[in-house]
Every structure is written in structure tokens, then in C-alpha cells.
Length: 216
Ligand SMILES: *Cc1c(COP(=O)(O)O)cnc(C)c1O
Image (cartoon, rainbow, N blue to C red; front, side, top):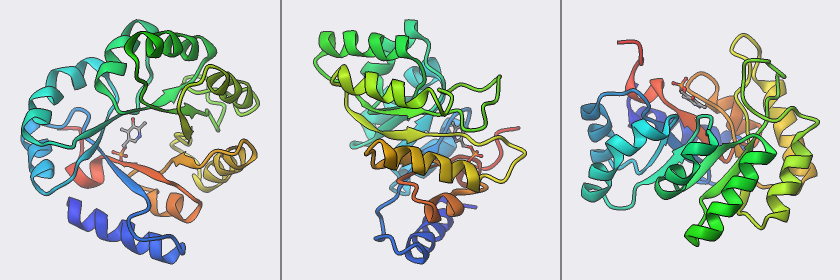
């Protein structure tokens, strides 16, 4: 697969779902990929990228950002509070707000820095013990806290369990978002982004289908 093939599939999925072409943001997940592949995708015109580790992103992105204006970086991996300041300096969006304490830390830093990335509350829709995210019945309290703190809340994010049909998880996330008056839905990866678009995704996070497998 290549960027253009994925972009075409995304357009087709938007049309099938009766969504405006280009209304779903494609986040190219570049974590662990070699810099030459990232550069190739930048050269094809992609400007929105996802990384799951603050440190890795800090090392690789500033030089790319100098050469390719308009890059927007999204943090899609768990965020430790001691990396929050660095994350807020680098990222335009954080998809992994998963606990009250992190929301409080982000609010303090936003005060300090005078800016804050767009935030998504991550929901552990499958209630998997090893996975980050607020449990579905804790999500509302976290959404309320983020709002009360005056932070820019864009929506909700989920990563469905790897061994299950993702559709019920996407539906649950969409229902939670609707109930809380939230527009943003960060859901769908290489294997299921078309399903996610059909169920209302506004942001899809696609890695291996664009860059190839991360194994080697
Ligand atoms: C790695 C990752 C992706 C991309 O996964 P692919 O299957 O390679 O498309 C999406 N979202 C998150 C949170 C990830 O960590």
C-alpha cells in the first residue's frame, strides 16, 4: 500500500458514508518507521502524523518540521505526566488523555505555556486491563473534568481489542461522544479505518497500510 492508495480508499469510504470528501483527517502513524520512509510520505504531501512516544517524536520531528512547513503532530500513545510538558511543546493534538491527574497536569501546563493542543479523551471500550483509557462508565467524569478545566476538548479516541470485531467498539465510542456533545472521533487503524468512517470517525490513525510493517 501507499499513501495515495490509502487516500483513495478513505475518499471512497467518505462517499459511501455520505460524508464530505476530505472531512476525515488521515493521521499517518510514523512510529518506529525509518526516516527515509517518513520523508517519502512527507514528499508526497502528507502533513498530519501520529507518534506514540514523546521521546522518539522529539528526536525525529523538529528537523522535518523545518524542511516541511505545516506538519501537524498527533500523540496517540499513553502520556506519563513527567513527559507532559515536552508533549505539549511538540504536539498539536493529544489523543490519550486517560485520567483525571493527567487532565489536571495538562491544565497547569496550559496556563504556563499559554497554549494547549487539541485533546481527545481515550476510552478503553473493551475494558482491557492492560490497555490505557478511561473505562466507558468513567469517561463522562473525565470529559467533564477536561471541560471544567477549560481545556480544548476535541473528542474521544479508542483502540478496540485486537481480537474482536471493532464495529461495536466504534459504535460505543460514537454514542458516548454524541451523549456528551463531542464531535471528534479518533478511531480506525490500517485494518478497519473504512468501518470506522462508516460509523462516524473524524480522525483515522493509519500506520502499516501506508508505511509497511513495523516488524523489520
Ligand atoms: C500503532 C498505532 C496505530 C496504527 O496502527 P496500524 O495498524 O499500523 O495502522 C493507530 N493507533 C494507535 C494508538 C497506535 O498505537
